[in-house]
Length: 325
Ligand SMILES: Nc1ncnc2c1ncn2[C@@H]1O[C@H](COP(=O)(O)OP(=O)(O)OP(=O)(O)O)[C@@H](O)[C@H]1O
Ligand SMILES: [Mg+2]
Image 1: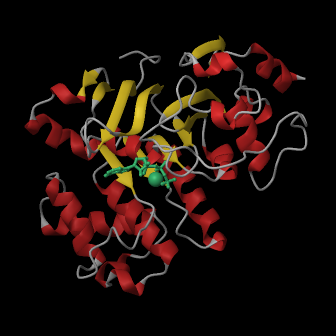
Image 2: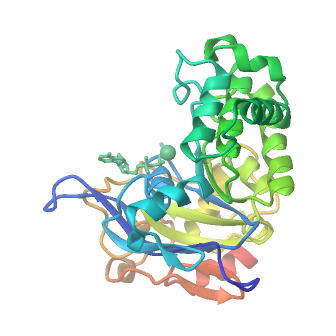
Protein backbone atom coordinates (compact mmCIF):
# COMPACT_ATOMS: atom_id res chain seq x y z
CA UNK A 1 0.00 0.00 0.00
CA UNK A 2 1.39 3.45 -0.78
CA UNK A 3 1.65 6.40 1.58
CA UNK A 4 -1.56 7.98 0.38
CA UNK A 5 -3.86 5.00 0.83
CA UNK A 6 -6.00 5.31 3.90
CA UNK A 7 -5.84 2.80 6.75
CA UNK A 8 -9.56 3.16 7.32
CA UNK A 9 -12.12 4.20 4.76
CA UNK A 10 -15.77 4.73 5.58
CA UNK A 11 -18.15 5.07 2.62
CA UNK A 12 -21.83 5.92 2.76
CA UNK A 13 -22.14 4.47 6.24
CA UNK A 14 -25.67 4.26 7.67
CA UNK A 15 -26.81 2.89 10.98
CA UNK A 16 -30.52 2.94 11.72
CA UNK A 17 -31.96 1.57 14.95
CA UNK A 18 -35.43 0.28 15.71
CA UNK A 19 -38.37 -0.43 13.43
CA UNK A 20 -37.86 -0.02 9.70
CA UNK A 21 -40.92 2.23 9.28
CA UNK A 22 -39.81 4.76 11.92
CA UNK A 23 -36.09 4.16 12.40
CA UNK A 24 -33.70 6.20 14.51
CA UNK A 25 -31.30 7.52 11.89
CA UNK A 26 -28.26 7.54 14.15
CA UNK A 27 -25.74 7.62 11.29
CA UNK A 28 -26.98 8.69 7.90
CA UNK A 29 -24.63 8.45 4.92
CA UNK A 30 -21.28 9.26 6.47
CA UNK A 31 -17.99 9.06 4.54
CA UNK A 32 -14.43 9.82 5.63
CA UNK A 33 -10.96 8.30 5.51
CA UNK A 34 -8.15 8.05 8.05
CA UNK A 35 -4.53 7.96 6.90
CA UNK A 36 -1.97 5.72 8.62
CA UNK A 37 -0.62 7.47 11.72
CA UNK A 38 -3.32 10.10 11.64
CA UNK A 39 -5.58 11.06 14.54
CA UNK A 40 -9.00 12.01 13.26
CA UNK A 41 -11.31 13.85 15.65
CA UNK A 42 -15.05 13.23 15.62
CA UNK A 43 -17.05 16.01 17.23
CA UNK A 44 -20.70 16.91 17.56
CA UNK A 45 -23.37 17.36 20.22
CA UNK A 46 -24.71 14.54 22.34
CA UNK A 47 -26.79 12.17 20.20
CA UNK A 48 -25.15 13.17 16.90
CA UNK A 49 -23.98 9.59 16.27
CA UNK A 50 -20.32 9.66 17.31
CA UNK A 51 -20.29 6.45 19.38
CA UNK A 52 -22.43 4.67 16.81
CA UNK A 53 -19.88 5.50 14.11
CA UNK A 54 -17.02 4.32 16.36
CA UNK A 55 -18.71 1.00 17.03
CA UNK A 56 -19.86 0.45 13.47
CA UNK A 57 -16.37 1.15 12.11
CA UNK A 58 -15.01 -1.58 14.40
CA UNK A 59 -17.94 -3.86 13.50
CA UNK A 60 -18.99 -4.09 17.11
CA UNK A 61 -22.30 -3.06 15.53
CA UNK A 62 -23.55 -4.11 12.09
CA UNK A 63 -24.19 -1.28 9.67
CA UNK A 64 -27.49 -0.67 7.88
CA UNK A 65 -25.73 0.36 4.67
CA UNK A 66 -22.37 1.46 3.36
CA UNK A 67 -18.95 -0.01 3.90
CA UNK A 68 -15.88 0.17 6.08
CA UNK A 69 -12.54 -0.69 4.52
CA UNK A 70 -9.41 -1.52 6.45
CA UNK A 71 -6.29 -1.41 4.26
CA UNK A 72 -8.64 -1.62 1.28
CA UNK A 73 -10.49 -4.71 2.50
CA UNK A 74 -14.21 -4.48 3.05
CA UNK A 75 -14.70 -5.66 6.63
CA UNK A 76 -18.18 -7.00 5.86
CA UNK A 77 -16.68 -9.39 3.30
CA UNK A 78 -14.15 -10.97 5.67
CA UNK A 79 -14.83 -14.45 7.00
CA UNK A 80 -15.57 -14.76 10.70
CA UNK A 81 -12.13 -16.28 11.21
CA UNK A 82 -10.27 -13.47 9.43
CA UNK A 83 -12.35 -10.88 11.29
CA UNK A 84 -11.46 -12.59 14.57
CA UNK A 85 -7.75 -12.33 13.78
CA UNK A 86 -8.12 -8.75 12.63
CA UNK A 87 -9.86 -7.82 15.91
CA UNK A 88 -6.51 -7.44 17.65
CA UNK A 89 -5.51 -4.71 15.20
CA UNK A 90 -8.66 -2.72 15.90
CA UNK A 91 -9.22 -1.67 19.49
CA UNK A 92 -11.52 0.62 21.43
CA UNK A 93 -10.97 2.65 24.59
CA UNK A 94 -14.19 3.47 26.39
CA UNK A 95 -15.43 6.54 28.19
CA UNK A 96 -15.98 4.88 31.54
CA UNK A 97 -12.88 2.96 32.53
CA UNK A 98 -14.60 1.41 35.53
CA UNK A 99 -17.55 -0.10 33.71
CA UNK A 100 -15.25 -1.70 31.14
CA UNK A 101 -13.11 -3.58 33.68
CA UNK A 102 -14.34 -6.77 35.33
CA UNK A 103 -14.39 -5.93 39.08
CA UNK A 104 -13.68 -9.53 40.07
CA UNK A 105 -10.50 -9.85 38.06
CA UNK A 106 -7.03 -8.67 39.03
CA UNK A 107 -5.42 -6.31 36.53
CA UNK A 108 -2.85 -8.96 35.60
CA UNK A 109 -5.64 -11.40 34.71
CA UNK A 110 -7.48 -8.75 32.68
CA UNK A 111 -4.36 -8.09 30.61
CA UNK A 112 -3.52 -11.81 30.36
CA UNK A 113 -7.00 -12.44 28.98
CA UNK A 114 -6.49 -9.82 26.25
CA UNK A 115 -3.15 -11.42 25.35
CA UNK A 116 -4.45 -14.99 25.26
CA UNK A 117 -7.57 -14.12 23.24
CA UNK A 118 -5.23 -13.20 20.42
CA UNK A 119 -2.67 -15.94 21.00
CA UNK A 120 0.06 -13.57 22.17
CA UNK A 121 2.66 -14.25 24.93
CA UNK A 122 1.83 -17.94 25.34
CA UNK A 123 4.19 -18.99 28.14
CA UNK A 124 3.62 -17.85 31.69
CA UNK A 125 6.99 -16.11 31.92
CA UNK A 126 6.43 -14.34 28.62
CA UNK A 127 2.99 -13.24 29.74
CA UNK A 128 4.21 -11.87 33.06
CA UNK A 129 7.00 -9.96 31.38
CA UNK A 130 4.61 -8.51 28.84
CA UNK A 131 2.11 -7.45 31.52
CA UNK A 132 4.85 -5.75 33.54
CA UNK A 133 5.99 -3.97 30.39
CA UNK A 134 2.46 -2.85 29.53
CA UNK A 135 1.84 -1.46 33.00
CA UNK A 136 5.12 0.45 32.87
CA UNK A 137 4.27 1.76 29.40
CA UNK A 138 1.09 3.41 30.69
CA UNK A 139 2.80 4.82 33.78
CA UNK A 140 1.73 2.19 36.32
CA UNK A 141 3.94 -0.29 38.19
CA UNK A 142 4.40 -4.04 37.56
CA UNK A 143 3.14 -4.88 41.08
CA UNK A 144 -0.21 -3.24 40.17
CA UNK A 145 -0.97 -6.50 38.30
CA UNK A 146 -2.03 -8.04 41.63
CA UNK A 147 -4.65 -5.40 42.39
CA UNK A 148 -8.36 -5.22 41.57
CA UNK A 149 -9.98 -2.39 39.58
CA UNK A 150 -11.57 -0.78 42.68
CA UNK A 151 -8.11 -0.22 44.15
CA UNK A 152 -7.30 2.35 41.46
CA UNK A 153 -8.22 5.97 40.86
CA UNK A 154 -10.23 6.95 37.77
CA UNK A 155 -7.12 8.10 35.93
CA UNK A 156 -5.28 4.89 36.78
CA UNK A 157 -8.24 2.84 35.58
CA UNK A 158 -8.23 4.70 32.29
CA UNK A 159 -4.51 3.82 32.01
CA UNK A 160 -5.45 0.17 32.54
CA UNK A 161 -8.00 0.49 29.73
CA UNK A 162 -5.25 1.90 27.53
CA UNK A 163 -2.87 -0.93 28.53
CA UNK A 164 -5.55 -3.49 27.65
CA UNK A 165 -6.05 -1.91 24.22
CA UNK A 166 -2.28 -1.83 23.64
CA UNK A 167 -1.77 -5.42 24.83
CA UNK A 168 -2.65 -6.80 21.42
CA UNK A 169 -0.45 -4.39 19.43
CA UNK A 170 -3.25 -2.59 17.59
CA UNK A 171 -2.86 -0.43 14.52
CA UNK A 172 -6.09 1.47 14.93
CA UNK A 173 -7.78 2.68 18.11
CA UNK A 174 -11.19 4.23 18.55
CA UNK A 175 -11.06 6.36 21.70
CA UNK A 176 -14.67 7.15 22.64
CA UNK A 177 -14.68 10.08 25.09
CA UNK A 178 -11.76 8.54 26.97
CA UNK A 179 -11.45 11.57 29.24
CA UNK A 180 -14.97 12.65 30.07
CA UNK A 181 -15.32 10.42 33.15
CA UNK A 182 -12.09 11.80 34.61
CA UNK A 183 -11.41 14.74 36.91
CA UNK A 184 -10.11 17.73 34.97
CA UNK A 185 -6.92 17.51 37.04
CA UNK A 186 -6.01 14.11 35.61
CA UNK A 187 -7.40 14.58 32.11
CA UNK A 188 -4.20 16.19 30.90
CA UNK A 189 -2.13 13.25 32.15
CA UNK A 190 -4.20 10.82 30.12
CA UNK A 191 -4.11 13.15 27.08
CA UNK A 192 -0.32 13.24 27.27
CA UNK A 193 -0.20 9.47 27.68
CA UNK A 194 -2.31 9.00 24.54
CA UNK A 195 -0.16 11.48 22.61
CA UNK A 196 3.07 9.69 23.68
CA UNK A 197 1.79 6.22 22.87
CA UNK A 198 0.50 7.36 19.51
CA UNK A 199 4.00 8.52 18.54
CA UNK A 200 5.71 5.48 19.98
CA UNK A 201 3.49 2.86 18.40
CA UNK A 202 2.56 4.84 15.27
CA UNK A 203 -1.10 4.40 16.12
CA UNK A 204 -3.91 5.59 13.93
CA UNK A 205 -6.81 6.96 15.97
CA UNK A 206 -10.41 7.98 15.74
CA UNK A 207 -10.77 10.32 18.69
CA UNK A 208 -14.36 10.96 19.75
CA UNK A 209 -14.98 13.93 22.00
CA UNK A 210 -17.11 16.95 22.56
CA UNK A 211 -14.24 18.75 24.27
CA UNK A 212 -13.04 21.01 21.48
CA UNK A 213 -9.87 22.06 23.32
CA UNK A 214 -8.73 18.44 23.56
CA UNK A 215 -9.60 17.81 19.91
CA UNK A 216 -7.63 20.88 18.87
CA UNK A 217 -4.63 19.66 20.85
CA UNK A 218 -4.66 16.00 19.84
CA UNK A 219 -6.15 15.67 16.35
CA UNK A 220 -4.70 16.17 12.88
CA UNK A 221 -8.06 16.56 11.18
CA UNK A 222 -11.61 16.84 12.42
CA UNK A 223 -14.99 15.55 11.24
CA UNK A 224 -17.93 17.63 12.48
CA UNK A 225 -21.11 15.63 12.86
CA UNK A 226 -24.69 16.82 13.29
CA UNK A 227 -27.72 14.51 13.56
CA UNK A 228 -25.92 11.62 11.92
CA UNK A 229 -24.49 13.63 9.03
CA UNK A 230 -21.10 15.15 8.29
CA UNK A 231 -21.23 18.96 8.23
CA UNK A 232 -17.53 19.69 7.75
CA UNK A 233 -14.16 17.97 7.49
CA UNK A 234 -10.93 19.96 7.76
CA UNK A 235 -7.38 19.95 9.08
CA UNK A 236 -7.56 20.94 12.77
CA UNK A 237 -5.83 24.31 12.49
CA UNK A 238 -7.96 25.36 9.54
CA UNK A 239 -11.16 24.25 11.24
CA UNK A 240 -10.51 26.18 14.44
CA UNK A 241 -9.04 29.19 12.66
CA UNK A 242 -11.70 29.49 9.99
CA UNK A 243 -14.73 27.21 10.35
CA UNK A 244 -16.58 27.03 7.02
CA UNK A 245 -19.90 25.51 8.08
CA UNK A 246 -22.51 27.45 10.08
CA UNK A 247 -22.78 24.54 12.51
CA UNK A 248 -19.03 24.48 13.19
CA UNK A 249 -19.11 28.26 13.54
CA UNK A 250 -21.85 27.98 16.16
CA UNK A 251 -20.08 25.14 17.99
CA UNK A 252 -16.91 27.19 18.32
CA UNK A 253 -18.82 30.21 19.62
CA UNK A 254 -20.57 27.97 22.16
CA UNK A 255 -17.35 26.33 23.36
CA UNK A 256 -16.07 27.43 26.80
CA UNK A 257 -13.26 29.48 25.31
CA UNK A 258 -14.63 31.05 22.11
CA UNK A 259 -11.90 32.22 19.82
CA UNK A 260 -11.66 36.04 20.02
CA UNK A 261 -10.79 36.10 16.33
CA UNK A 262 -14.04 34.49 15.23
CA UNK A 263 -16.24 36.98 13.38
CA UNK A 264 -19.13 38.34 15.44
CA UNK A 265 -21.53 37.26 12.67
CA UNK A 266 -21.25 33.78 14.18
CA UNK A 267 -24.11 33.03 16.52
CA UNK A 268 -24.24 30.42 19.26
CA UNK A 269 -26.66 27.53 18.89
CA UNK A 270 -30.26 27.96 19.96
CA UNK A 271 -32.66 25.18 20.84
CA UNK A 272 -32.26 21.44 20.92
CA UNK A 273 -31.06 18.96 18.36
CA UNK A 274 -34.14 17.55 16.51
CA UNK A 275 -35.12 13.89 16.88
CA UNK A 276 -33.21 11.48 14.64
CA UNK A 277 -36.54 9.66 14.14
CA UNK A 278 -37.90 12.66 12.20
CA UNK A 279 -34.93 14.71 11.01
CA UNK A 280 -35.63 17.97 9.12
CA UNK A 281 -35.90 17.67 5.34
CA UNK A 282 -33.02 18.93 3.22
CA UNK A 283 -30.19 20.16 5.44
CA UNK A 284 -30.66 18.61 8.90
CA UNK A 285 -29.08 21.67 10.52
CA UNK A 286 -31.42 24.21 8.87
CA UNK A 287 -33.87 24.42 11.82
CA UNK A 288 -31.10 25.86 14.01
CA UNK A 289 -29.08 27.62 11.34
CA UNK A 290 -29.03 31.43 11.42
CA UNK A 291 -28.42 31.49 7.66
CA UNK A 292 -31.12 29.05 6.50
CA UNK A 293 -33.26 29.94 3.50
CA UNK A 294 -36.19 28.09 1.87
CA UNK A 295 -33.89 26.20 -0.48
CA UNK A 296 -32.18 24.56 2.50
CA UNK A 297 -35.36 22.54 3.13
CA UNK A 298 -35.48 21.26 -0.45
CA UNK A 299 -32.25 19.33 -0.89
CA UNK A 300 -29.68 17.53 1.20
CA UNK A 301 -26.52 19.60 0.72
CA UNK A 302 -23.69 17.48 -0.72
CA UNK A 303 -20.40 17.31 1.18
CA UNK A 304 -18.22 19.22 -1.28
CA UNK A 305 -14.48 19.93 -1.31
CA UNK A 306 -14.36 23.73 -1.31
CA UNK A 307 -10.56 24.00 -1.12
CA UNK A 308 -7.91 21.28 -0.92
CA UNK A 309 -8.68 19.09 2.10
CA UNK A 310 -11.62 21.22 3.22
CA UNK A 311 -15.09 19.76 2.91
CA UNK A 312 -18.42 21.22 3.89
CA UNK A 313 -22.10 20.44 3.38
CA UNK A 314 -23.86 23.77 2.88
CA UNK A 315 -25.50 25.32 -0.19
CA UNK A 316 -24.94 28.93 0.89
CA UNK A 317 -21.64 30.36 -0.38
CA UNK A 318 -22.07 33.50 1.73
CA UNK A 319 -21.72 31.58 5.01
CA UNK A 320 -18.20 30.72 3.92
CA UNK A 321 -17.26 34.29 3.05
CA UNK A 322 -18.59 35.49 6.38
CA UNK A 323 -16.26 33.07 8.07
CA UNK A 324 -13.35 34.49 6.11
CA UNK A 325 -14.24 38.13 6.80
N1 LIG B 1 -28.99 0.73 20.60
C1 LIG B 1 -29.70 1.80 20.25
N2 LIG B 1 -31.02 1.72 20.00
C2 LIG B 1 -31.73 2.80 19.62
N3 LIG B 1 -31.21 4.02 19.45
C3 LIG B 1 -29.90 4.16 19.67
C4 LIG B 1 -29.06 3.07 20.09
N4 LIG B 1 -27.79 3.54 20.23
C5 LIG B 1 -27.83 4.85 19.93
N5 LIG B 1 -29.09 5.23 19.60
C6 LIG B 1 -29.51 6.58 19.18
O1 LIG B 1 -28.69 6.97 18.11
C7 LIG B 1 -28.34 8.36 18.20
C8 LIG B 1 -26.84 8.51 18.23
O2 LIG B 1 -26.35 7.98 19.45
P1 LIG B 1 -24.81 7.96 19.80
O3 LIG B 1 -24.65 7.24 21.09
O4 LIG B 1 -24.05 7.45 18.64
O5 LIG B 1 -24.50 9.52 19.98
P2 LIG B 1 -23.18 10.25 20.51
O6 LIG B 1 -22.84 11.29 19.50
O7 LIG B 1 -22.14 9.24 20.84
O8 LIG B 1 -23.71 10.98 21.82
P3 LIG B 1 -22.95 11.27 23.22
O9 LIG B 1 -22.12 12.51 22.97
O10 LIG B 1 -24.07 11.55 24.17
O11 LIG B 1 -22.12 10.08 23.58
C9 LIG B 1 -29.06 8.88 19.44
O12 LIG B 1 -30.28 9.44 19.04
C10 LIG B 1 -29.29 7.63 20.26
O13 LIG B 1 -30.43 7.78 21.06
MG1 LIG C 1 -21.18 8.71 22.61
